[in-house]
Amino acid sequence: MTATLLRGRLLSFVRRPEGIDDTGSYRYESDGGLLIEDGRIAAIGDYADVRRNAPADAEEIDHRPHLILPGFIDTHVHFPQMQVIGAYAANLLEWLHTYTFPEECRFVEPAHAARIARHFYDEMIRHGTTTAAAYCSVHKASADAYFAEALRRNMCMIGGKVMMDRNAPQGLLDTPEMGYDETRAVIAEWHGKGRNHVAITPRFAITSTPAQMEATALLAREFPDLHIQTHLSENDEEIRFTAQLYPDAIDYTDVYAHYGLLGPKSLFGHCIHLSEREADAMSEAGAVAVHCPTSNLFLGSGLFPLKSLVRRDKPVRIGVATDVGGGTSYSMLKTLDETYKIQQLLGERLNPFESFYHMTLGNAEAVSLADRIGTLEPGTDADLAVLDAAATPAMALRMEIVRSLADELFLLQTLGDDRAVRETYVAGKPMKTVI
Image (cartoon, rainbow, N blue to C red; front, top):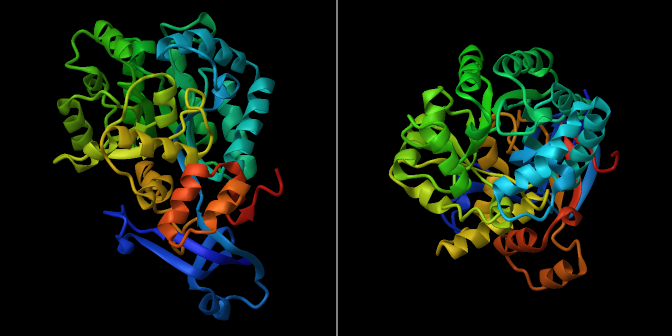
């Protein structure tokens, strides 16, 4: 058995913070010890106590004065879109047809898919992200590359081959039968291999015919434990187009409900413009609305009402995500910084403890994996991020007068990026030093 003892300031959440003074929502050790054995957390507590009970031959790594947290979790990202991040366009549909769809056509080539997969995982690790829920392209080769690289790095990753059979270039179209067959093949080859989780992934209602949605429904019935991911109510034009394509549906959400795709492991990207009826349907099904703030701002899609969705009588589960490449940063720190600003524009406040909850335990709960990731609880996987709030000259200057943990977290959120991530651990193994 291999054992490692990390020393540093430890922060982990036990539930959603109800306010900035809700100290019962998190665990903080100012001089903490985290014992890792065979890739999992074996003990957490005061350093002296953990050291006393640790194996005598445990390797000790001192990360003081930095913060050690669970690794960040990104609940919605497009790995084939790395080379279109920051592409100039007016809105979602223009951006898709001008940049994204042509780029995704390249992923029919296994060598290209493998190269971008390596870069994708490098960026995840550089930014402290240890788990992501990603869309591959329509090509099975892209899913193969994505999961092979996850397996090589032993990362806990969710992903799926996109299904789309209309309203896209010919090189990006499958058929209902092909989408079904290739998704089944990806499940057979990759789900449960290493730490991989395959998601059933119809891109969105606009790019799937009713026949393909029926095939998706069949997959959901055959594999009820799998994640489902798609897009919902991101853009006004998209919503109108969906209504034209599915005239019998009550609304956009009803399209997915009709095919049995609303459930507790369903991740719906964006959900900016939900009606009250749709929010009720999401809540009753336990489905997750995934907020993608940098993408929503970049494409002018709208302001996501996070706080009002959480506090309604029928609350909606929330995830937060980068949505690269519509999103403009791989950093969950930057993502929550923009989340904060959007809530400010809506007259709401998002305190820094809530932000870090969303990056860790909150997103682990959103992807139904909080028993394995997102906390520093004994028995969970040792996926960690080590953060330095004085990583840049500007941050170091600000840190000179920071006197509270809340202020330090807010500084990391507002000024931090990959430079603030001193180390990323995956299953107890330091990764930034080896990529």
